[in-house]
Length: 243
Image 1 (cartoon, helix red, strand yellow):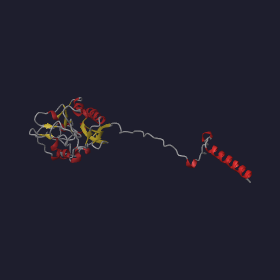
Image 2 (cartoon, rainbow, N blue to C red):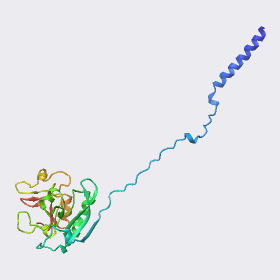
Image 3 (cartoon, helix red, strand yellow):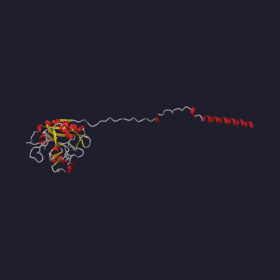
Image 4 (cartoon, rainbow, N blue to C red):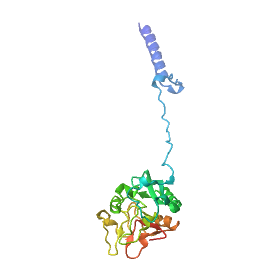
């Protein structure tokens, strides 16, 4: 009995040591990669860089203007015939930082000047509130200005004068008239919504200041700025040769 028990103890000890030895040698085992399971595979997202489109390039079209497009702004007795005027349809940069299409009527001899200047302003993203023919306001200069409308031809007299305005010849343009008002020598303006813009220089979207990019662009084509007048200032006004 004693011998049998001793032999059994040796066998159990041998088995136990073998078990410990297997568990103590993980370095000798070779890991087997798991089988690929398509149902559990994950794909790495691929970054896609959007292609920038950007705003459309500047465009301008010059065409003859018909009498019915000028029902209020032109009449018999104006210093130029409507046949000597041209409709310029062009791209401008809006106050909403988006491109828009506007219309101006000017004398046929200055269409190149207008296209040159407004292409420059568009490329510089210089903002304009709106650009409609003054006929949209029945040629009422006050209403067009109060609406902050940029416009050109209008057969009317110069402010405070019996002489024809350069607008009546199609050789003048008013730009953002709210931000760039007509200011008397005493510093007043007729438009309440323009009161805070009567001083220069001043900051603001669509504001024209002495020597800025708008003034320089018009000067390069021979147009003068009303902001340089002595006494009365017309900050919105540019005209061919002045006046």
